Length: 442
Image (cartoon, rainbow, N blue to C red):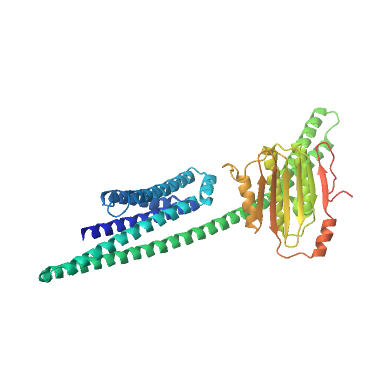
């Protein structure tokens, strides 16, 4: 009876370790996905329970139940899983999502957890076999007992009945705890998915709010500041016409003031274009991308080749493509050390595709630095519109960024053929005067 009781205590300890490790894994997943430190509370609590249960397991007589190698393997799998969880939590606390994504995507945690569960199931099955063997021995002893020991047999049967009832109660309690744990884990996973969805929607809303605020600020600068600078320029011109001819010093100062006002007007125009490109609403997407490529080539000294097909998209999708190209060119100018760039825009039945290719030094897309907010913003902007952003790069072999933006209504094949014939193909290089209009050269 003592051996059976000890076996049940060992089983309870193993079940408790499995449950505590599962709770720690749930807390770890919640913290990795959300970064909310509140998820570390159940994680730390589960680790404390695991430490306590491991000490309890050390004090129990496991040598009569299991082989030394089997129990050591069980401890090893548990230690590996705890080390993997501690690593991902520490990497998440150090704000290194690339390491966390690598560990999670490699399925190491799933494999370790599966191995741990398999080993625990084997231990439980072995302990159950041991218990059954002891029960059989007990029944044999009762069968061969002398008839005169009826009272002792009866007492033993009563004790055995109580023990079985306690065992069943423990078993039912264990099953209830397991069901509660599974329900809690499912609820946590559902909450994580819901919160992830809400965070994505919030980020999209904030991005749209930024664009709206940029448009509002651009209109205010154009209407208010533009009117003030223009009025000041007209006043200076009126004063200059009324000055006597024998005051050249005042004339020079007014001329300098006129030039300063002209610079202010030009600066105002550049700021407005950076906030909200007017060419996008006035000239269309193709002309805007040509202007953007030309101005980038003039500033950076890098030749830019464009191959742009006319597309028919809603304003939000056109702005997404424009901002993607703008951010890609900015990153190329800062980091790529490229010698040439190619920007292309293709029109398909259900979507439009923009790609930016450079021959720079490239990088490893799987190991992005923490400061790569531009690429993250591009991906979120494109995916927020229902599209997909692909980054193909490698050290020393350049970079290709491809954005696929869906259209709300499919386009007829005949229209695609005519659009392909009207494709704008230009090459802009420093020192070469570009065409003045936004259309392709004849």
